[in-house]
Amino acid sequence: LLYTAMMGFGYLTFGDNAASNLLLNYAENDKLAVVGRLATGASILFGYPLAMVGLRNSLSGMCASLSTEPALPKTLKTALGAAAEESARVPLIVGLLTLITAIACTVEDIGVVVGVS
Image (cartoon, rainbow, N blue to C red; front, side):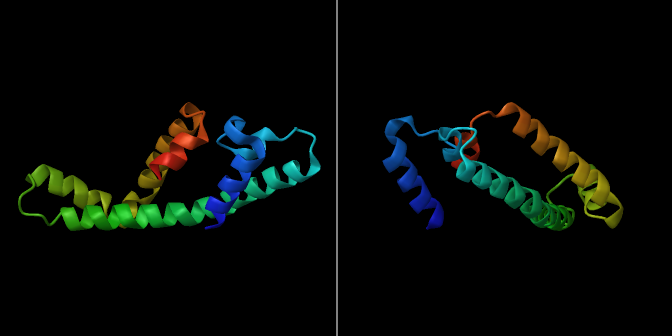
């Protein structure tokens, strides 16, 4: 509801010229926009680890569940079982961070990311 209201106010303020990240519409030296950018950065910085833990746990659980699936080939079940073990946490996190960082460096328009989520 809050995001929808902010999008609506942004569109009312800037019309069709509204950027996908509303803070980009304001001048770089606008003090309130700078505060907004800092707050957005802090939100991402402190929210990211929480999202990563959930993603890691979900992927580990999915791998554990799929490793017992009788229809899958034995080599795939073995690999999935290994990915679900405690010892695979660090490689899983490094792989996820690498993938997410590559996407973040490639996608320039935040609207694409928001549209997918």
